[in-house]
Image (tube, rainbow, N blue to C red):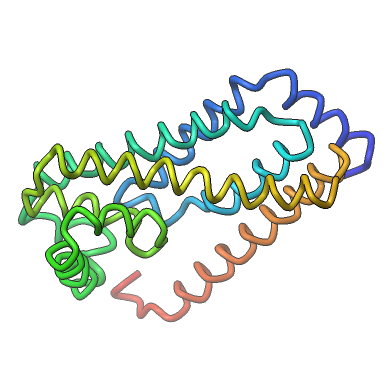
Length: 208
């Protein structure tokens, strides 16, 4: 990407702050869900958007609002799915392929109670699964909602804030912030693709 095209993209993002917030909402909402959540690199995207906010391209308050809302509502839907499926969670991916993961989630929720929902927000392995397991185990709805909302707000602030602080302190230009964000996303995407290929090669024909 040339400096001119990067600058043009920066202008387009700055002119549409509402769409940026909506895109973050959808991304984080999906990332919070069981089955598909592991496939979404939300943390890298949030770091990148934070860097764009630090360079004045993206509105930090709108980005934070969209991210926190997506995380909170995604966790709530996950809780509802778990409450509906209960003992049938083992039929869903990743529990279907990794039964021990379901037991670890159950032990984690039973050990920490409502705090498990907060802690899971900061852990990629637990983020798409703990809220569903909390619903399946019958955690009190108000208790879940409190820790889910608290975790969503602090997690969003932390990940956006790291990118914001770095970009703001280094004083990137808008074009440089765009290029940095695309490089980070490219590295993350390439890493996920490589892991998927390696995992696929390790599977025997029956598992495929």
